[in-house]
Length: 427
Image (cartoon, rainbow, N blue to C red; front, side, top):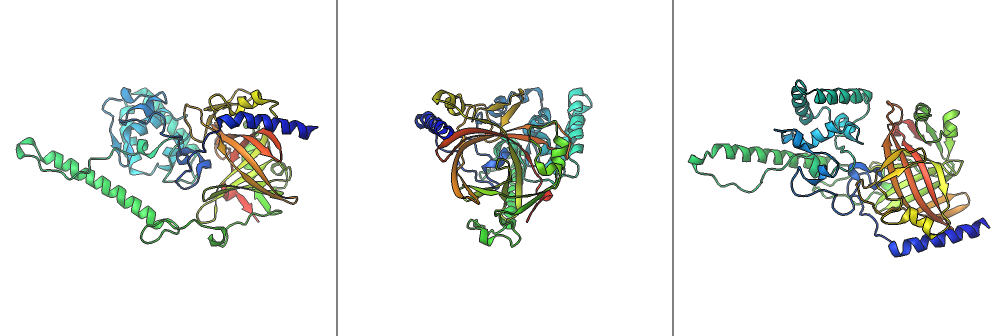
């Protein structure tokens, strides 16, 4: 009876999707893949609000205007001055504090901080913002830094300083004060040369890059580092339970059994999700419902790990109920925000923005002792800061998926947190 009910539900889901099917989102071109979100997440079409003029719609679409900062410096090293003031004025926004943490030794940030401190002497609000930033940075003291980090939904052209015209200059007449324009042009050439040198060094130091700078062929499991983990059934995972214990009562992620006793757990199933040349691996735990989601970087090491557990499961009964989840304009999977039953809002982590986007197709191949099966999912990831001090979880995720498998269809709502790769042992 239950199987027949789920078959009917799947038919209703397919009827909802068929006339509204959307093309998949474009694949991320930067390291790490689309599932990381943030700056590595590709937008759907042009980034909303990105128009001509660096002070234009991108900031306005986020409810902020730089007009209250007359005489704002245009650049601080590689970084755009408007962008840095935007982050300082929006420290509660996902990624703002993380940007300052990851770039706190950058000369551009130091110059910006010096100007902000100068203004703070006569502006109490800036003084309050700087004090709040220092408090947040102190909580991240000792955490690793990523020099390439950008906050969620920030395209590089917004974050980086405006480029100077690179056309070959024509010397102006002496009476027009040609010396100053020439200095400006020379300074612009120096900045551009520095950017080019930085890119060249980054390309030459990237693992596997050829001497001519040609990107290497996609790595396979066989040419990764010898110590790269080989995911298999029955393998043992050892995980530090600290994040679960510190987050207990403040996050929705149910504490796994291993967080309350032996920190070792065995893998009961291995799921693989491929997107182009990238692959996500899901290591399902004995309950069959929770999993560690692991991404291996170009060196074959664990570059990212998240733990997800079931928060809720829904079986839509008909086409109308499926539409509430999957409708392109009003469906909950792909809506800019997702609200959990306690009223908390989570912003869309994949492709942030103010407009609905289609859920991402995530076909998964799952290997277990019973054999290999296929599962199709249309999912969206949401995130919100927890407000907890490190080493408690800083961000909690909500993964919402419409699942199709074996003639059945349902909706899963999962809660998840980041797991430090350093605290994870795979054997």
